[in-house]
Length: 297
Image (cartoon, rainbow, N blue to C red; front, side, top):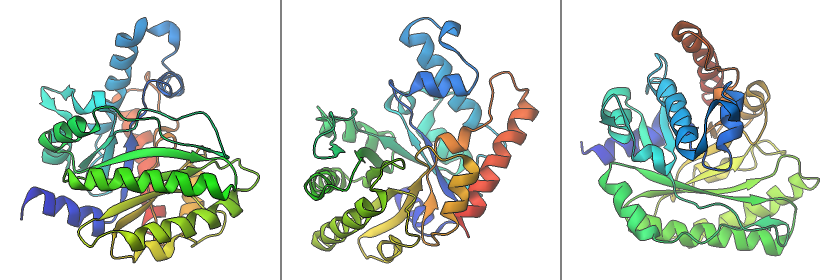
């Protein structure tokens, strides 16, 4: 079986979740602070990104970070181009951990308009996709944000996501469509109803040779996205934690039986740079265990 076929089968049918290790420039200081590395501990972007890479490498090399529970991992562009123990990260993930590598390709968000934040332009996307394909990346993700139940804004976000998804699919990669709904929105439930309707229309319009994944906020109404998991154009539906604690996110996920997790903050909750390796492995293993159990519920 070709590598991409094996990876596709694992993502479509495997038991487990997708780890989000793709914090980028704006979110890196906060992620490091939660890990016990404060701004005073590094000087400039180079040292900051090295500290972040060291954290990610420690996670990837941890005992329980294997395909037994972790199906895939989403990487930041810098991480895709880095090595761990001299091995390119995407290669190491698949060859030694059995974990399918994905890449975050977006360049951030526009200012809020019509209750949403659209994706900023992604210059040289074609070049980045070709590079990702060459490095063994299986799929990509790009995150928009919905702040309120605004029909015009939600339609625009979903259309942009699917337009870029077609370009990504044409490059031989599987696009993750990620229109996040802000979990603090006062109109979250209404926004999710609108979002589900827009996604359904876009999925039905996809050609037969295009397959996507969906990454969606844990919904207010449990099961609202279940039908998408059975759609012929959808490889898998995954949930983002969106700021919920590991316990909250896992409990909500367990109510949505056709979604699996793709958590970031919930995965790294409680980890600290000062932990010994055994302490770190135990703490990460507990998070992995909770997220895994919720994903297979």
